[in-house]
Image (tube, rainbow, N blue to C red; front, side, top):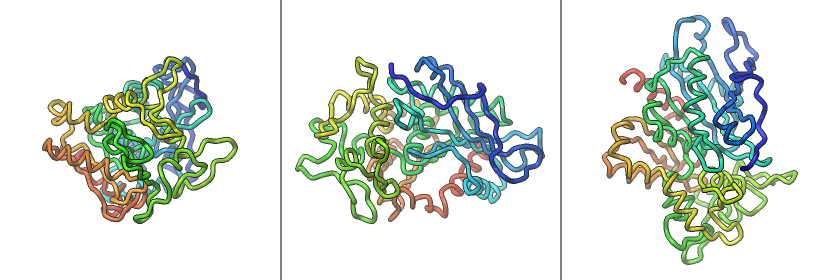
Amino acid sequence: MRRSAYRAAITAFGLLLATLARPVAAGPQLFDITFRSSQLSQFFRQPVDIGASVLLPPSYYKEPNRRYPVIYVVPAFEGTDVVTRDTELEWQRPMQSVRTEFIIVILQGMMNIDGEEVHTEFADSATNGPWGAALMQEFIPATDAHFRTIASGNARFLFGHSSGAWAVLWLQINYPATFNGAWAVSPDPVDFHDFFGPDLTKPGQNFYHDAAGNAYGICQFGRHDETTIERLVNGPYGCGSRGEQAHGGEKPWGQRQMDTYDDVFSPAQANGKPAPLINRTTGAIDPAVATYWEAHYDMTQLLVTRWDTLGPLLKGKLHVFVGDRDTFHLEGSVMLMRDALKKLGSDAEISVAPGDDHWQIFNYHGGLVRYSIGEMVERLTNN
């Protein structure tokens, strides 16, 4: 079993630290917390923590008997749970506009594996550990006990971007009664028939080029791909806002992103490490690994095969937004999920925004944070 380096927890639930430099009514409004997970610690055979920032609403200390609904936020790959003044306003202003307050819990999705940062995706994994189970069975009950939440599935919501968007959809689908809706912005591939372009379910597919030998492009800006998947995975550069060159022996961003997928989705090899999906040099896809990925983590397939059970439990709870010019070509995967759910008669809200890329999509509907909070309030009121 692999060993990992984690930041140390000071107590079981929490280092309580006010980091917003402004006055509050009777106590700190922002808490940086670490939670020692027994399940993850047992899996890795060393102490393992789940980290988060908790932003309390302005009325929290003024109304000591009041309880609040919660929004669990999962950031993107390399995203952080650090809350700045801008982050605070991003969440507080929409709440003011709808006159409803939430406790905001921004989860730290990144973890350190063998000195390399990858995203947990908050999914249970053969090689990455039981992150979903630890969140559900340990972290959320501890949050409910420590803060004045409404400890009900009707009052819990999910919001995420990119890898975090994949995570919140995964949590909503696998724990449908625990949450009252997931709002996913530009999610990582949700249908493995289109994994940034390549079809992982088709025998003989190559991850770098199609059957005619044409390279799969990525890092789309406008309608132009700046590079190819092969160069992104193997080269020293990222793309767009990730365009910096790796330094100090650090793997390039594209390699670390692929490592995340192997860590989360792959079966374990004899040495305990994840079986790689692809040959990083040739792009050849291992069919056995691809089959495992699809069987365990393809969310569209999961929904289709379990719709008789899941359909009623997910009514009104799935909300997905992606730009039709997504930087990483994630719109294709989302549209496949949209079409499959439409055939099933689902009421899922799946929107493809014209002209938007991986980040511009946040401006959709007049601002997706504000729009999503408005929909959360509707569900909170009507369910």
